[in-house]
Image (tube, rainbow over the protein chains, first blue to last red):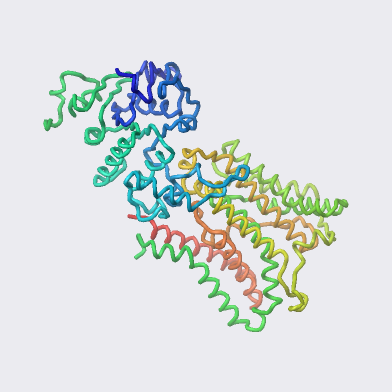
Length: 260
Length: 327
């Protein structure tokens, strides 16, 4: 495994929950501008690994390395301050607030008076519009309440929020699972746009179409351990499906479709 | 027509309430042309509704977070008895003026800290508890009315200015100015500061607020403290207007405050509503009372009508939500 250019790396990470071992000696890395697909069956440890990378959990053993430096994330806030952001499956947006407020929620620009910030709304709107333009996200107006948006637009806003403050790594948990099929493509294209801006994207997905469209590399976890890791052009859908089920080599018999 | 009609939704949200007020005023003017628009009557409406307006402003902040504060009536009476006792004990008036809001803030902090630290399932529980507790403390302190306050203490609730243009019982009450100042201040806080927007975000989606790095529990403690503060101000205004502290003050006032907020278009589901709407809700309830009194209608009709108006107001909110959400 090449680690010289890795932006975010996990070395020998083990996570216990009481008597349960959720992750066992897992190694992980992702590079700048790389889209990594993470696959595995339910309970394989994908979400646990992502929560460790985003600071929600601390590893029981092992080490995280960010930009070559060993790091310790005591909370999601620490991880976020380093530029590691998480996009949640249910988007986690406030539907009653306009798009621009959701993007800067908790980090509003403005003048500080003690603990209170008087929000510079013109600046927030401008910044939001510029950021959405950069990501090629089109909305009618940044003043639109999020509840008026479609699922795909909401996901786009959630991604825009995650990347609004110079994110280096964006972790997405099933970004297309809740979307109508016609909107999936837009979100996947947005992932490609993030890559062009040098952001490392980690995407958990069960959909082979998504992974083979947007990712450069795929890694599989099985029973809490590394199972396989390969550039996409060196593997096939059926092989990856086999990895999810914990099988290697004899994938032909397991194939559901024979397109590949 | 109802589903997915943002224009209708916007109209109902912005102007529905103003239409209601204009209709009510037109009706009252038609039935009592000589009395209703008289300066004395209008002064009375403003004066009588100043303390309910304060309670409603505080309740509004709580309802934005999809919470509820059932204890505001009890906070009011506790703050009122405390300031009346202090006044009688010869405490200088500048300190007596501060006692009302200060007691309110302490009670509100108790609500907020109790709710968040004990991780109670809903603020209904915490504030139902303090509804009893605060009133109990108030009754324990004094079961007898205390009247005859210093003029400076009465000033916010009783004084009015007519600038020589109106005959003495009529004029613009000081309490009305205080309500306007508080309303403008609250509007600025809720709409222009980060904590105000966080309060709205918590009402819209607490999970979104949490993952955005907002300390939701901390904000909620402030929210209940603000509500308590307004209840304390209400106590000051009511004590001044009545020139006394009396143990039955504020009984049922929490329900009037909730009603005014809901009639004013704030959503019981949280995250929605305007300060102007809340004032309009207070005014609607005040006009209703005033109109029924002027027309010599049995006061039980007030209860019946206010009840029906609450149901209607929430139904309008339901229609509005249906019009706003996409299918």
